[in-house]
Length: 358
Image (tube, rainbow, N blue to C red; front, side, top):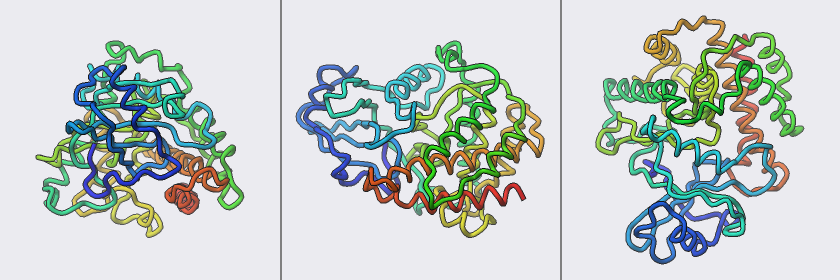
């Protein structure tokens, strides 16, 4: 995993771990431990504020990626390293865009938490703005990039659940209702007095829940900074990262959550301020184009009212995710500067939900 603009940097003191202990564990347990001699150099990716991600560079030139939970109080059921590892391992035969898994350590005595290690995918990861010099300067290239990104999501939704063995993740009918109630409860538990309560948004979601669509594998955090692009052709997706929230459920909930990140050029200024990906650039698709292309390829008719629900839910869910991170900063459980910024992020998403509701 490499990044086009914000690469791996110095490890924060609170997130440090014993690199020698990890190397010793890998040499004894990894599915492929070649080139893992010595103690690796450890660098931390700054992009995320949920699970922590590190690059381990060994003396012989091999580089791998380590994922572990954050410190501090965690939401119930969150940061399950074993689940994240096994989902990717099971998906690999039917969805080749997942990274190759190397090892899962459930023994917290090794570094103080569970962790897993995967192969590094070498490529470009887009952040807030499109960088120069990577072949995305033309309208045609940006159009292909958007189409290929949405095709990667559609292909995931078409992945064979029986062949992967992941159908048992499906809890049956009522996925939409469970998600609305579940994220509402998570938000209430993480609420701090300096942000809105989202009460009217949560009530609206309950009142407007559409019936579930046929369930598929879903990513639940699909956005450009979780996509690795081919360094030789930046319109081509090589891999999809960060499977922490993946499950089996309504695919339109997945698309609606992706649209919460999909800021376009005519969105209000506060939304532009918190933009995380370059979808506002000229030639990038609008949300309308995404919905249309998705519906056409999957043969779905998506009523305007349903689309509105999915976008409101996705925006609220993003606020709940941000608030869970901000809660840890508010209560002094982390010094991560990104976590401290999340309160403002939540306030803007509160206003955005109100705009979507009209």
